[in-house]
Amino acid sequence: MRNICVIGVGYVGLVTGTAFADLGNRVRALDINEERIANLKKAILPIYEPGLGELVERNMKAGRLQFTTSYQEALEDAEFAFICVGTPEGVDGEADLQYVRAAAEEIARLMKKPLIIINKSTVPVGTGDWVANIVRENQKEPIPFAVVSCPEFLREGSAVSDFFNPDRTVLGSMDLEAADRVAQLHLPLRAPIVVTDLRTAEMIKYASNAFLATKISFINEISNICETLGADVKEVATGMGYDKRIGPHFLEAGVGYGGSCFPKDVKALAYMAQVHGTHPQLLQAVMDINDYQRRHVVRKLEEIWGGSVSGKTIGLLGLAFKQNTDDMREAPSITVGDYLNGRGAKVRGYDPVAMKNAGKIMPYVEMVDDPYLLAKDVDALIVLTPWNEFKQLDMRKIKELMKEPILIDGRNLYEPDLMQNIGFTYRGIGRGYDGTKTNG
Ligand code: NAD
Ligand code: UGA
Image 1 (cartoon, protein in one colour):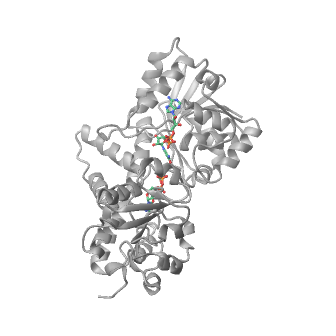
Image 2 (cartoon, protein in one colour; image 1 turned 180 degrees about the vertical axis):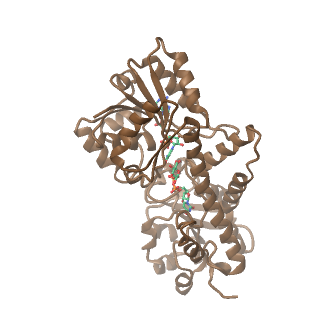
Image 3 (cartoon, rainbow, N blue to C red; image 1 turned 120 degrees about the vertical axis):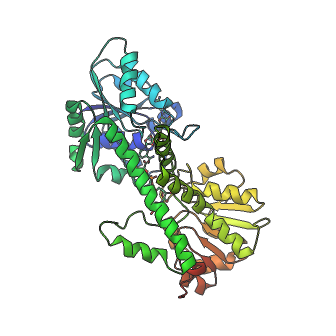
């Protein structure tokens, strides 16, 4: 059993803290957001994440997991402090490190015994050294410490299972003894552990996210070529995926990647490259394709109507940036909704869990309680999030409810032939000419 302090209880911090408590450690999780902590003390979670609520409750009851707003309390017995605060996009695309700085300063002021500071937030290359300097400069008296980079690779919506079944753990430090102690914490996860220097570990995180985003933009570009040539991108991806060098993952064409990480991390990596005199051509193309792809679903609608969406009522099926989350950060639905609203369309929306968050960002969207209410009298439906429950809808009923049976499937959830047989004017992403599988 180790004493661990986790700083920042968002997606990464709450999952990390709870999971380490579940592995038998004593965890104090801290946040400056008083409302979050007050709720967590009552086991009320600030985020929707499958399986996390039960785990939080169980570990709180067992006395292994505590929440606090006090750095003093959180650091009291801590041997390890995980920094898990946000690193949002800054004004020029760089990562904004103000929260990391604040956390490092507080750690320095209030640590009472030797400490291993572990950076889990996604931070620009060089931040580990910068954090070490901040701590050194702000300590009242010199107390030994080490900084270890341990980037996080979990995905929202499957965060708990990703944490317990990682593909690898990456640890970067100039202090090999510290890296080894952090490795010990991760041994129960039985994943390969890559130990390297600080900067390389920080780069592994950005390179991994940028590569995954590149795969998505690649398949989206292929999907556009498929549309002009009459090929089916889903089958193309399946055919490619069997090649072990390519792999089947992250080849789903759609409305482009969203979320709190890919958009900001690709931008931040491109920014780092640019300020250091490198021209990040591929990263720029990845971002350009993603911007283009987000509006592709609307272009399909305009094409069907031979012009503007003005005066039409359009239903957005799914609002969250992906399934199994209520996170709306950089969700493609915002780009689509804003575009439609800006051109005089009436926008209606439904999502199983993200409507509350979405309503704050898109106040013009009329939120409804279920997909059938969404379909009633709309001129078109656009699928934006691949929730499982959408696959089981009674599509005949949906079609009957709509004013015009136009279905734009931004996530390729449905089979083109089936939808056309039901009577929809159906457009998928990259599924042959106009969404049909016509040969030619
Ligand atoms: P988040 O916005 O959900 O949570 C961040 C939390 O930090 C908030 O609760 C905030 O109140 C708190 N905080 C801010 N400043 C603080 C301070 N000085 N002291 C204590 N708490 C403070 O963020 P997130 O999505 O969990 O992301 C955290 C980091 O992890 C980011 O760098 C992100 O890029 C990275 N990351 C995120 C994911 C993900 O799936 N969300 C996955 C891997 C890595
Ligand atoms: C992503 C990475 O997958 C995690 O490894 C990483 O830890 C995390 O970013 C992070 O750094 O925060 P996440 O953003 O939660 O995780 O979700 P993903 O499943 O990667 O999806 C990201 C976006 O890409 C979503 O909008 C999703 O719909 C889209 N996507 C994903 C596609 O359009 N096609 C695909 O084939 C896969």
